[in-house]
Length: 104
Image (cartoon, rainbow, N blue to C red; front, side, top):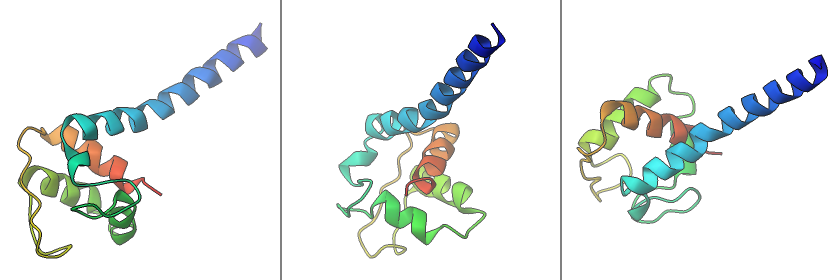
């Protein structure tokens, strides 16, 4: 019985740890992020892998990227501006930033 309970708990934990990644991918799609970005190749904006690599050693990266997602900007990746995305609330922006930074 204990073995079965442990197996169920481990399965549930594995499922929960996979959900945020999928949830963030779905969030990126629903907020139109994928119109300009892809996981592994440059489109209009940089790939998520390139963003994650650029900010890998920056402890403030989640907050910086969340702000960039909401407010937009230009100059970090060239002269094509990233438009502001006010439809993304602060919690969603932080979730997206953490998801992007976890892209390998």
